[in-house]
Amino acid sequence: MSAFSGDLVVLTPEGLYCPPGDFHIDPWRPVPRAVITHGHGDHARAGMGEYHCSTGSLPILRWRLGEQCYHVHAHGEPFVIGDARVSLHPAGHVLGSVQVRIEAGGEVWVASGDYKRQPDPTCAPFEVVPCDVFITEATFGLPVYRWPHTPDVAADIVDWRRRCEARGEAAVLFCYALGKAQRVLAEIAAHEDRPVLLHGAIATGVQVYRDAGVALPDTRAVAEEEKGRDFAGELVLAPPSAAGSSWMRRFRRAQTGFASGWMRIRGNRRRRNVDRGFVVSDHADWPDLVRTVRETGARRVIATHGDTHAIVRALCEEGIEAEGFRTGYGNED
View 1 (spheres, rainbow, N blue to C red):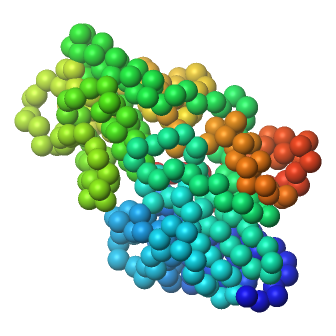
View 2 (spheres, rainbow, N blue to C red; view 1 turned 135 degrees about the vertical axis):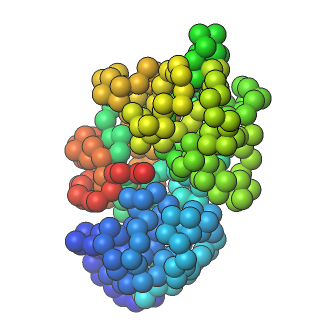
């Protein structure tokens, strides 16, 4: 290992750059070498010379980006890029999501990508990686964001579907096609054994998860149902882009819901113009952001996308050196 001195990750116009390894992490502009934390569109983009990713992310990247030059690594398996020793560790965000551990010049830095600490039956749980410097997301970096127990939210979704059935309505739940939809499916399976109907964009991602060995309940594609069918009483998962589209016209009567951490704020539900909001997030809430920083033992923290100001201020008050990076992340799907 070289005697490199200086920051192991710096902010460039292309994204987060590792000077000793000469690679970028989740770059938002084309670069020769990219290490990808997970498959959401704001972190995995086309145009890179080569991609380093986890084994679990490979099917998702192939789905999203097609065939590229991929280098696949198992969790915790060290590999060398330039003068940096790198390894990938579970982030608990979505299937295949990882944190990037970088060792060079006698220091260890960890770039978390997106992560959560809540249990999720569809992906590996978050692993605390001790480090000198921790780069944390702050998507929900305000004290108001505190998540309820997800199995309880899943029970509420099932109860909502049943109430819609009693009124002769379909229950159309908007959720992101990668990660959120699959987690919702897995969670509600513990409360109800009946097929769930899927928008085509959701169905494709669900099949990717199934092919990767993730157990999910039975589903059917809305597009394959007979024309003129009454969908009353059915739970239908659809991407947020379907709201207000012509696709919704096939449901004679429907209530709409949205599954997202943003539903923690009632005003966000009104802005989404949905009947119900269900608080389900694939990101860490405020208590888990602070807890995770403490558990890494990092002496310095860099907060990226989200509400960075509050978390930076809170960490500085604890005596931890903290700052923010302005990045190109944030639009997951």
